[in-house]
Length: 181
Image 1: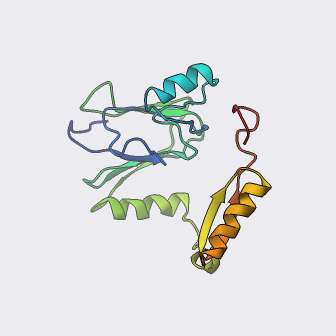
Image 2 (image 1 turned 60 degrees about the vertical axis):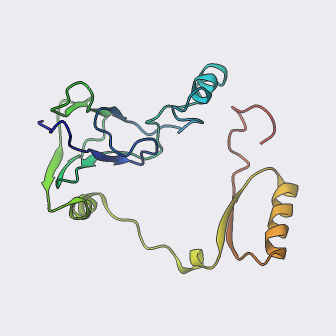
C-alpha cells in the first residue's frame, strides 16, 4: 500500500536497534536476540565463531505484525503464519509478504499513535497491572553460581538496597557459550 517517502513507521513488536523502520525489511519471526544485534565487528565475529549467536538488528523475542505511524495510520495482521514487511524496496509503499493463502488483518486510523495503540491493544490484549511487590525494591538479575549470587546479594543488603526479587539466569547459554555461565 502507499506510504509517503518521509512517513515514519513504528512498531513490529520489541525492536531494539531501530525506532523508525522505514527503509528496512522487517521479518516477523521471534528468535533468540543474539549478542551484538548487528553491531560490528562483534556480531560478525559471533555469527562466524559462535554458531550464529550474534543475531542481527531485527532479531527479537517479541515480533508482532503490526505498525503505526505518527500520522495516525496503523496496520495489524491477524495471521499466525510467517510474514515480513518490506519498507525497503520502494520508498513510497509498504509491501507485505505472508506465507498463507489468506491475509487477515485490520487497517486503522486515529488522531495519533496513542489512540492507535489503544485500538491495537483492544484486539491483541493488554498487560495486566504489575503486582504491588515489584515497587518494594530492585529486581536484580544475577548469574555466576551460588557463591557469586550470595556475595552480591549480601553486599546489596549490607548497603541497605531494597530488593524485591532476584532473577537468576545461570542456565542461560550453558550449551552454546564458551567458559563458565
